[in-house]
Amino acid sequence: MARLPALFVTHGGGPCFWMSFPEPLGPHAFDTLGHYFSHLLAGLPERPKAVLIVSAHWEETQPTVSTATRPGMLFDYYGFPPHTYELSYPAAGSPDLAAKIKGLLEGAGIACGTDDKRGFDHGVFVPMLMIDPDAGLPVVMLSLQQDLDPARHLAIGEALAPLRDEGVLIIGSGSSFHNLRTYFNGAPGEAAAFDTWLTETVSTAEDREQRLIDWAQAPSARACHPREEHLLPLMVTAGAARGEAGHRVFHDLIGGKPMSGYSFGA
Image (tube, rainbow, N blue to C red; front, side, top):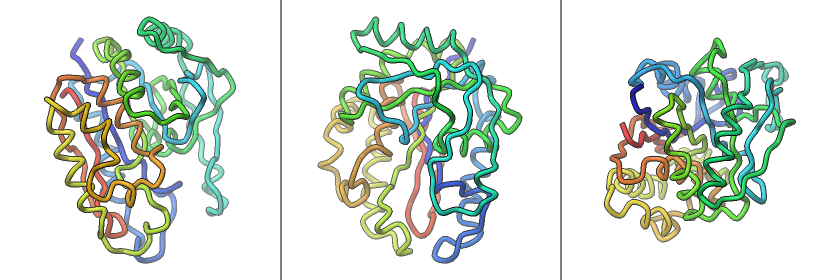
């Protein structure tokens, strides 16, 4: 079986594909992102057997894997139109894959918890409804660790790398830019400098890990990520392809802000 890449995606804003936003976003702000998601599977070396998704919207004291056979829905956004709380993503979970994930992490000396209750949060179901609308792929979720330590998340990804050779698509779901205070001002501002740095870093295999560990020293880093939970899924995907090339596979201006997505290892 072909080795699959590990992907970092920007998952948009709330239920962005099922509503129209006012300016400066506008009614078509997320069209390019939706097009990317809808063609994502076709661009892979082969169709995955399952998806492991690390969402920016799940944090625990230690990495925690979902073991539910049929996860429900977790509508963890607020103030959106009523119809966006009726979305459904009926993908199956995979307790067997969850057990393998737990075993890989623990084999690398990383304690791992389990959760059989958690539903799909919007960092999961929003992109997956576009990526695999028929919900044919089993989806397992893995939390971030609450300390948000970049080196720890790189190590988590490295431990999970063998899954890429077993048909598991690893997706880190967050955002290359996530500052809600400036999101709607319509100007790229400091976001452009950080986006340039991030793309250069992803494309630099030699010292990529150290650059990511020191990400807060990058140009305009804290202006783009006052809190880094939306960037940490990228660390997991980068760790899962340590020493392998990375490159940008998605880029768009959304509300005037540059947003990027990356592929590691393919």
